[in-house]
Length: 332
Image (cartoon, rainbow, N blue to C red; front, side, top):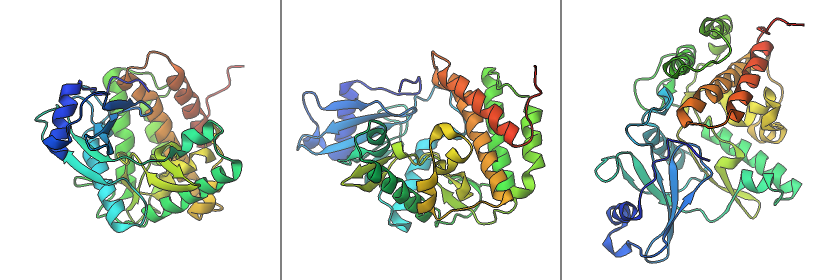
């Protein structure tokens, strides 16, 4: 995916980064680096070292590029999330070989990790390269892995790094407010007044108070952020949006409110979730509201040249607002 946040680097800089991470004897020659283009935010390269090993380099956006509030320092959040998952669960994540937060060679955080030799689960499923039974089993496995990630309990609600909040209501309200302010900064039309959005949160805030344990939530664990080999999930990728909060916020449940994201039944089976209580159903809609809001606002920050994602986000925001009792009056 194309985005102005991608901090691409010339070959000589990539060689300098390899030398710092792996030593001068591993600096490669020739055509050693290939950009991995599937992501929306960071730039990622598949790099072959001099001894033939393949590794992945991720580089955060340039220092001068404006990003959403939740994206400030996001690569450090990813490193912390990977540390938590790798040390406190059995969920497979790539090994981090070297992290450089100095900004001495590149004006951004970056890290090298192992290359996982497997298929991207979401891309392979979408292309029809996997049998239906493998896709179903993979989604159930994703749900089970995600549930294990949620077993990690944090010291507060909200960001993994920093002070956080004492309650989930406060943390989630802050996340909504941050996104609305992000939209204000770039003058984007979300189709709703900010007071209308905030009113929905206030009306349903008591459901957020049911969440009393701050659990590690990936937020962005889609099938496309996982790797599959021989019918098994062998790696979970892209942990940078993780927070301490409510497991019902996980991406695998988004299809409950937004059919565009697919049937969540298999994921839910692995996740161990069947029927939702009325309060849980309301919380899930609030999380879909948050996602739709981000889909609209972030288009300005990515420099999109078409309106496809913006239009989708606007439609989904209208739909979830209606589900929360705020349907637009009919113009007929």
